[in-house]
Length: 260
Length: 260
Image (cartoon, rainbow over all chains, first blue to last red; front, side):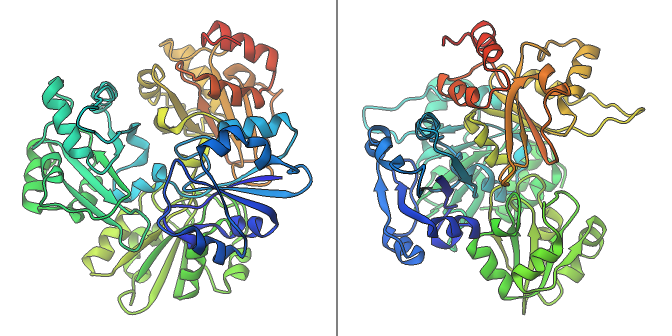
């Protein structure tokens, strides 16, 4: 059996009881290490599981799938994934290859940023498409994802994952002028280290979130653009995360047409 | 401290190690029982936790929030939620009330249908808005959610949660004629008991899924409408869930413009 096991958001204790029990039956334990970052060292996982953990980088998963799957029709093998197995990246190749080899696959699910982001107070039902923003460099500053955001903002919220996302969004809007959002009129929620004991959630304008006044601290970071159709209960939760409650209330009234 | 703890998708072993440890420190343990259904009896939870579990129906949470929060500034209280605490329903009132009483709140996240549905092979990034479909009765057959689906299908997928969803969608399209989807040309994925040992995933046309040929078995059920922009790797995973591979391949070529 190949177990694909989600580790959840933050540390070794975020695994499910079911996932932990499955690991204990496995002959080999791989940790997928190229799409996400756990906030703990691999050695802490090894101590907690009582098993050696083999790091599987992108090369290994793509070119050595057969090594990972070796004998998995006879013994149990665990493939650990930060978040949920199908959270942001599907491990399609590995699943397809296992299927070709008639190896049974069991997925053990867990929280990922894709559902836990609901902690910011906005209804997941109303979220639009999700976009990853690459880090800008001096010479590489892609802006094509704004096409998606422009379409989606009218109906809900959109989630970006990047440390510098707020600043980059402002720069892209200045360049393209599509009116997808406005630095001082569009609200956004900055979320850092979700699910950890140092989790931080701040609601402010894009401009404020891009400034040095707001320091979310260490990664991982997410940014949610607040769509125009905001429910008053969503607004109430956002107020609890306000960077500046007075200016937040003004924007809720003037731009989001909510009464106090 | 008020702990809001996600129980995950299926049984008592889907709780995280962190969630289980938190429960063990709690003086009172409430189980939210009105928005979701766990597939196990409460007594199994009580045995596993070694704690009495108090059922909190909608009335209790709305009218007796202060009873749930009583002394939570001095002792720990757990509020258990099937799925993730913020998966489908935010427990806004309870969080807002705790904040008013200066009671600290810690959320312990878990998988919910909102992220685990990625198991069907479609990229979560591309999902559109999510809609709950109410059960039709003889006299009450609301169809207003098709407004949302019509807008969204062009770009991705949409998830419905209902046992009879496929049949209801066909009926609504016949009535409204918006061309949002087509009984024999639109692919959908039926997902039953996700995360349990009896999980079932079937990809077929809406018409096939609505027919008696396909029996997904006991609830809970979800239905994903497959959007027009399908990646070939997504299609490859869908083939593994095919009800009828030959007709699925024809539709992928004719309607979704994918080559084999």
